[in-house]
Length: 537
Image (cartoon, rainbow, N blue to C red; front, side, top):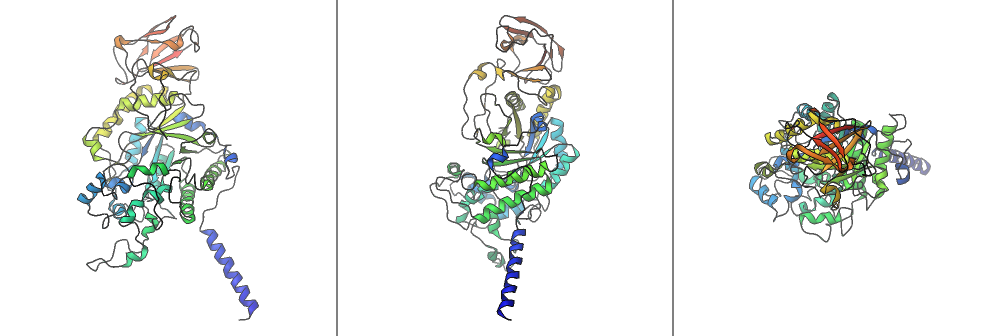
């Protein structure tokens, strides 16, 4: 072959190689949004989400197989941690039964997504979330870019697709939560055990001569641990100081970052989730590579805008946002509530127990009560927020009878009072009473829940000119005074034309100098949780 022909062939091969490389990455969809902060600020929270107010989350994946609490796939690798001790007692050493075996053991044999979504819809949920992948890096959909997924390993089912089908049947918008950016540091304790295994190790026979079940799969696609360990921490919880990739955190490789971007873009393209939750400071890899998050948001917004006349009708959620970032995505507060109303829509995410199912919480009766959840919901909505509530699911895909009891209690209240929640907007003030006047600052991304509401705490919102005043408990002697409606109050709105109690009807009232005096009936519709007064002027 002469030199010119050789050079030409090499050029063709190089072009083919570059073309194949280009095809390995998902293309960022073009549209009105560009992958930069300024362009992304065009986004506005869609009205459908502002109306929704209440969603339920299935924070469920292979870590629930152990039914031993949150962050199990990390705690199981710490030799002085209670989860490690439980793991060894039940499964053996993580050297022999590590995360990959836990994923394979998870079969979800009793999971019925349609039955669960139907239940959640009946309780009053206006949208539904599924886990997409946790920090364990295991994708719960037929993932093009992650071979460790629920179709290839474990349940052998497309979890996201089946949840999506159930949501479509019951007309609930679908959300998917993404947590995988932190796998890089979060699974570092596995390096002492099975975290450094490679694909080649899978071809080595077991001690008895049989083949490994994971032969052909690459453990590093799951663990991502062939890298230098982070510095400056030794305990399970100390990783929080490195959540934004500082303080000695090992920096993720370009391949790892691009793999996550591709996974999320493929998820958007194939499943059309109307919401995405990112368990990150702002967005994946914010602090070490801001571009990945901007790429994902631009693609997400354009993918939706191109289907909806140029308007993105989707809602992404991130944590610890500054005021500018709250303009381009929804602020999520984990297990907490701001102590004041917010100018822009936001969300609280919380759980009635542990994020991952925990037998200890069940046995010790430590679930949040229906009353606690309802009062949180009312408080959140009064402050321009939305509540996303996780109901832990057992490894087998079912929920327990104590959780059903909590859901039934929420349903009893919502059946009577849902109109005071769904479709409402903030009033002149979010509330009055002891807690409305107290300071209760957030801790990092949230973590200030546990308010002790009383009947003196009242929360407000409105819809179409109608004011809803919710008492956070039934008052003594069935009498209350709403001070915000006093003639000298800055929120005075005139003399009411009528006052009703939801689930009951008109009640006696009088407008006095110190506020609106209302007498409630002895009957307590909607349970003994939070009576809602409907006031028209």
